[in-house]
Amino acid sequence: MTGFGSAEQGGCRVEIRSLNQRFLDIYIKAPSFLNQHEMTFRNVIRDRFSRGKFDVSISLSGEATAGLKLNKEVAGRIFNALRSVQEEFAIPGQIDINSIANFHDMFMEQDVSYDIEEIRRVFGDAVDNLFAMRDREGQLLVEEISRIVGVLGAMNDEMKARSAQAAPEAAARLKERLMSLVDNQEIDPARLHQEIAVLAGKSDITEEIARFDCHIQQFREVLGSDGIIGRKLDFLVQELNREVNTMSSKSVDYKVSKLAVDMKTEIEKIREQVQNLQ
Image (cartoon, rainbow, N blue to C red; front, side):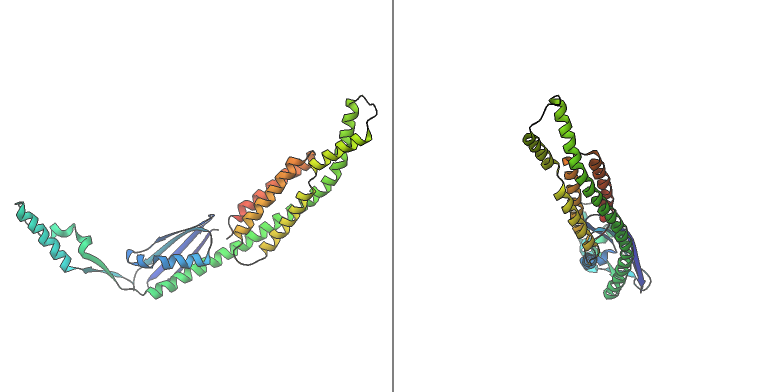
């Protein structure tokens, strides 16, 4: 689910952007001296969100500034090592500040004045603002998904009515075909009933319709519940699709098959929206 949250205080600014993603992925850009606190920031996001791609930016300025701290002992050892190499190999030239400048990472450190508790509070405020924005979007998504679920429920009722009507029509077509094959001669009623029963058994979708109704009811219950619902809805979408596929494969009626295609189209709409819910 997309969203943006930010907060700023005491020279610290935090911005968090989130994008739709099935799993949880967190990228944090912050000054290097905050690397030791990165796991804390990650856990704050994990506690509030279960899916999405999060880009986090933490910047310090003003009251929270960085200076330089020199480790003179390390700088001295570097200088002595360079002079020893020069003497041993009779290397001409003079060793000066420029000679050891390339080793600055080894003896120069950032000396930063900052309040980590203050940064954590600002980070928490940014997460709260992001959560509020995603929550508003989530409510709109739930309303749209509920509307589509209602459409699917009505389609399944239509499927139930059509299926009941299709069975005797299929039996009549079978009888007509058999009569044409035997040139309108008398057909053994027992054999006819047997063939009709076999056809009815193969094309009966009563169980699939009932299970589809059950999944629709579960879908509505999950949508009305609190907490993490995205993965539950993912599973129910798969079950809905499975039932419709079975209806379509068993059907011998054109209208039932067409209705099954329309139902799969609506299910795909739900699948796309569910990916945005956590």
